[in-house]
Amino acid sequence: MSDLDFSNWSKGIQQRTEAVLDRLLPANNIIPTKLHEAMRYATLGGGKRVRALLAHGAGEFCHADAKKVDIAAAAVEMIHAYSLVHDDMPCMDDDDLRRGKPSCHKQFDDATALLVGDALQSLAFQALSNPGLLAPQQQLEMVQLLAIASGSRGMAGGQAIDLASVGQSLTQTELEYMHIHKTGALIRAATLLGGHCASQQEADRIHALGQYAQNIGLAFQVVDDILDTEADTATLGKTAGKDADDNKPTYVTILGLARAKALAQELYDQAIAPLQPYGEQASRLVQLAQFITNRGF
Amino acid sequence: MSDLDFSNWSKGIQQRTEAVLDRLLPANNIIPTKLHEAMRYATLGGGKRVRALLAHGAGEFCHADAKKVDIAAAAVEMIHAYSLVHDDMPCMDDDDLRRGKPSCHKQFDDATALLVGDALQSLAFQALSNPGLLAPQQQLEMVQLLAIASGSRGMAGGQAIDLASVGQSLTQTELEYMHIHKTGALIRAATLLGGHCASQQEADRIHALGQYAQNIGLAFQVVDDILDTEADTATLGKTAGKDADDNKPTYVTILGLARAKALAQELYDQAIAPLQPYGEQASRLVQLAQFITNRGF
Image (cartoon, rainbow over all chains, first blue to last red; front, side, top):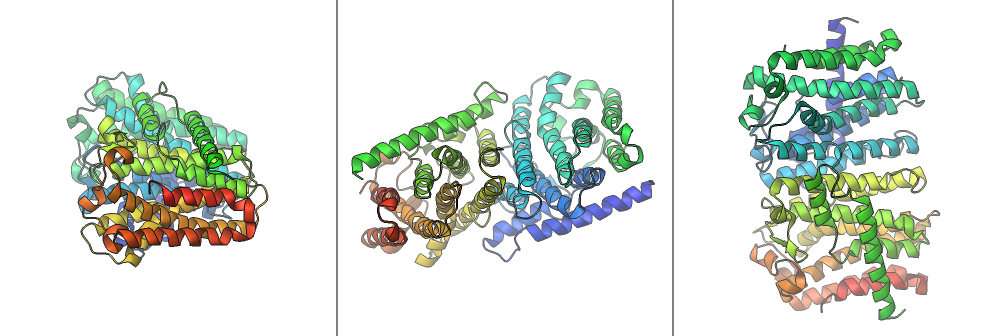
């Protein structure tokens, strides 16, 4: 498949994800209107939808119905959106800019941003547990997977480790541990949820997806750190160089730019290795891995 | 059943709820240790566990296995604990005291409190979706019920309306709308989840539980407002008179003390009316309604 084909495919996924989120989010005119407006502000109209792309790429790899994957992808994007809203708040990273717009607490207020995050998390689990999506057993497994990935031993736990690491000198192993939780857990969940939408589960393919997702999740973070160093604020849509300014350890501060880039390449290789036996059937996931590791450089 | 019997029963439920929560919450020595310590601080060792009592009362009424109800009760108590942690934060009610102890953000810090709430919400859905608790279909319905009750059209939405009402003069109808969401939704969910743990669902009993819970949820809030006016801080375990000081409308400020007490009695009567056909089988739920409407006066 060509780059053009991938570009069209990803645009299609981004559009359908936007449409599904628009449908699942309560309308602006439903009470409490300000909260619903803020939830929509924080979730719609932005982002590369990397997690939705991974869910759909994995769904295609496992022959899942894309309409089912839509819901799983939207649920993961809601969890991601909530984490960004809370992460940007003054008591966390205190960031005023997100996706090129004022972050949620700047556009609205801190209390509303807190509730936006809380309600988006609930809505993600509401979407995944909506009756009739898949077999109840499958949906229940998906709820379990997303809950574990989001919680104190997944994404929220990674945030806690990240907070504790400010001003600390971490080893590469410690940094990796943090990122496996902070961003890796949800990226892995997105990928596996896509696979879990298939009516027939193939254990080999799910296992390959797990290995792929683990490596691509870390690669994603290494690339984020590289972009944070190299890109300017306008390109990034969030405040560039903020992590380094905040005295947070990054792959670039620990390894230097050249070795960080080599690590991204190495993680890419490890991500696609388990997909080799599937040849052309895995080409979308390979393209996605390229897309994630080549953003902007 | 006597008052002594009810007192022993409720102590037993409080103890088993504490034990189940202790088991479901990650241990203090699991990384990230500070987050897990704070989650345990915010959830364990306090509170009347009204929602767990309602879940178990409803579970007994529907002949559910108490061991199943334990998990549902714990999940609801986690959602309740998360809402208190976020509610106490400086950007919300800014309250330093909770259950007679420093509130979570005072004992730890704002960022940790934010993550404690986030991770407790995830853990509630993790507990409810744990494989093998009940039939997958039943568990999925319970996840759906709790997600809706927690979200923007339930508890979180009620918080948003509460925030918007500060300094406003509300009618009794508007105040009722706020409380039906803010506290009523989760109290209703607790009661219905207890009933949903039964292996055989009886539609009539579930319907009666819904009506009972709706009224008892409102009664709970009216009594809270009365207690907030009458009790002192030591008895209450949180800052007394805070709502009135914060210029928040309460049932007492709108109706006056005497009419607020009459309303609590009226809601009690409406709560137990749908249980009359069940006679002695509903006596535990009637006792619970008495307990909720007679706290402290």
